[in-house]
Length: 230
Image 1: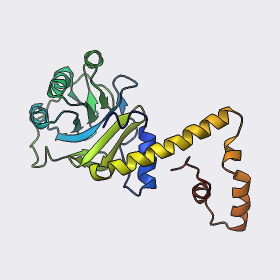
Image 2: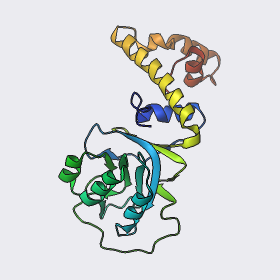
Image 3: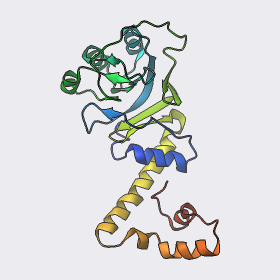
Image 4: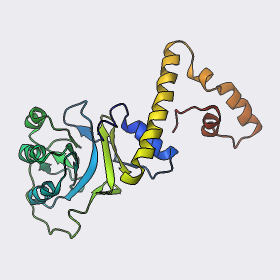
């Protein structure tokens, strides 16, 4: 899956979801890789954190090669739920990376390990709680307003995180590739002196909109084969 994602990005995947009428599930803004430039893509291996690493060890015991451990820590900002030992264990289990709705710690050690880890930042404090475990602790992980489970593929890069249903991922990635080709060509032409207004026949759009106020720029882009808004 990471190979299929190699020439794409989460913005392209997000735009492709819109184009393909796949519900867009993007993580809330602010998630970042511990080491800039890291990327990950793979089937979701969910785990909800309740204060102990046991749930991670159990999830990793069930993980397949290339899975991505998606951790639900409720977006908490008062504790880090993973550190170097969990990430080392994840690497030993063969997972492709970790995506955390929460915080991490042991930043230098995580950078040295090199396994992609995405979180909302670092915190020196570990959990000082032990909450009651829910029945679905290993079935789904919450990530902001979204739920992710084994039927999903997760994509993460410097722009953030997007979840896509596994059954629709081929269609979405194909559309993302098409959108990317159009946008790369548009960028090349701008650098060569052909403005985006000219490429999108913007004057024509303004004329059509004056005649029909309901005519939108997205309709116009679809008519001419543009891709900058989806």
